[in-house]
Amino acid sequence: MTLGIGLIGAGGMGRAHLARIHNDLAGARIAAVADINAEAARTAAEPYGATVYTSSAELIADPQVDAVLIATFGKVHAPDVIACVEAGKYVLCEKPLATTPEDCIAIMEAEQKAGKKLVTVGFMRRFDTAYRQMKEVLDAGEHGYATLVHCRHRNPSVPEGYTTRNMIDDTAIHEIDICRFLLDEEIVSVRVDTPRATSRRYDHLQDPLVLVARTASGVLIDDEVNVNIQFGYSIECELVMEAGTVRLGDQERVHVRDTAGNRNAMCQSHIDRFQEAFNREVQEWINAVAADRHTGSTSWDGYAATCVVDAGLASLEDGGLQVDVEMIAKPAFYA
Ligand SMILES: NC(=O)C1=CN([C@@H]2O[C@H](COP(=O)(O)OP(=O)(O)OC[C@H]3O[C@@H](n4cnc5c(N)ncnc54)[C@H](O)[C@@H]3O)[C@@H](O)[C@H]2O)C=CC1
Ligand SMILES: O=C1[C@@H](O)[C@H](O)[C@@H](O)[C@H](O)[C@H]1O
Image (cartoon, rainbow, N blue to C red; front, side, top):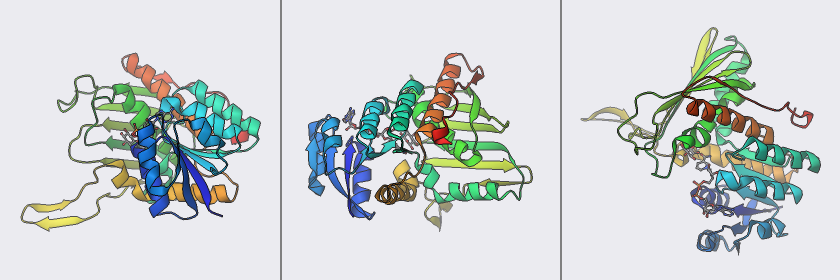
């Protein structure tokens, strides 16, 4: 069976997903595209002969659409995710699942009412080969338990509309999720430190910042978020255990040696760095939907990440105080 995929949100990420489904993946076709911007929807749908909508409700109701991919702005994800769940359709929603814990709770309630896990959050790093290998090394237990995780999330630059809040809810949310994934436990408190700002930023930005988080068992996570680093898209992660460390390897594709020196080519964007992970994420989702089962991160994972983001934002507002993460008890449905 070839699945009919409907995309809501035909911006950069949505169009990248369409291209991968059409060019690189198997088992699905693009059935429909919706965007509040009619021209964006039309342009994105045209190469695939997909139906064009300006209303997400119409796309979700389309019988040609077996499953839905949401790549709109985070703050408008929740109503469309809930509509998909109520229509009994699997949905892969780009991060963040929603921008408030309340919206995430509404999604979890809808899903529990449907009696089936239908929602996957687009935390694509969980599909990255190197992060998976890091988790395997930790889980094997040979080096003892984890004590620290050092993360660095560096982007070459960000557009003027990107805010300091986005450094946590849009950027650091990836480390928040991947650390929960690696360590298999919740983050219970967060502090955000604000070092000397780089002159390479727009004036309104507090860049870089460092998020310091602690998990339930006491593992300390530090995450340098540095989004105008100029030289490339650089993601680093080192997990420290009692008797060993494991870290992501170099992300460079080629190594050049010439009269200018001995150097690596750097990734320049998330698409560049995580192309393989994105492909695996969407392919595994297509395979799972075809087999009528859930895959990847759950609504609970989306909720937990949003709660940590909220604590981080509160710390930022409070001048860097440590803030406890507030969460509801985990429903048995997500155990
Ligand atoms: N996993 C990752 O590394 C990345 C994930 N993202 C996520 O993907 C999502 C989209 O990001 P971008 O593509 O960069 O944004 P974008 O701004 O390029 O595109 C968003 C699109 O959604 C449309 N839209 C907004 N509200 C809508 C609504 N209610 N109904 C229908 N269409 C609507 C806009 O018109 C626009 O075309 C965000 O959640 C973002 O966080 C983005 C970049 C990387
Ligand atoms: O998700 C992403 C963007 O939305 C975000 O703005 C970037 O900072 C991240 O590196 C990228 O992976």
